[in-house]
Image (cartoon, rainbow, N blue to C red; front, side, top):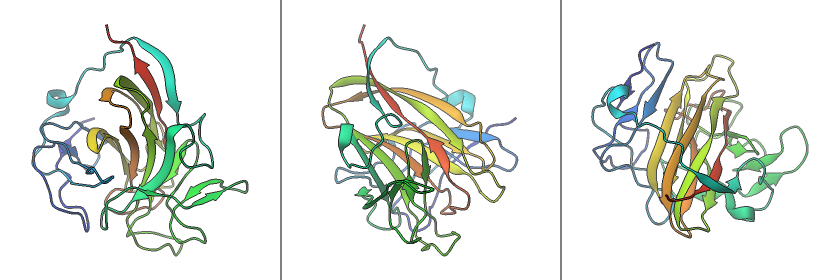
Length: 252
């Protein structure tokens, strides 16, 4: 099936657009598209996450795809599933969100619900937002929403802060969990210190998803952000599996 790349273009209430990044769009009949940054990637800024959407045309997947090389790895540094907890900062993990139509900065989720039908971190209790995450899944909030939630675009963000310098390998799984036919799809991103290094769009029915694997360079204190975008600010049935493991890499 034809995979088509696109320019993300104007996101509702988004800040200024920078050029030089190939991005993705859900094409009619497309099964899923990958975005590979070329040139200057969007930046979340030194103050935290700060969205600058890409613009411009796209190339073909064959022109932009990078071969994944399995490097030698040593110890497992972080695991978003095994180390998930109700404590912000434990094992270097933080649970939050950003509002691309607002300040665009990383905000820690204030509420942790333990036990019950759906334990995890929430941007607000009492049904204010859909934005939440547990050990393996995440849900964003959109302007187009359901269940009486506030019509605000929020991207769910799982953040790990590095304790090492050098190369790391970040890998995980991204797939739709809710597939009732109402979702217009979701996008996931990996940002290192505010720079986008990986992104992928999934159609709303794609519960098979994709495994991702990126080798990246960090310093002690670098932020690794795993982000779920409701796609065009529409959060209907957008709960998705989005996990991350971080491994140290042995330089040859």
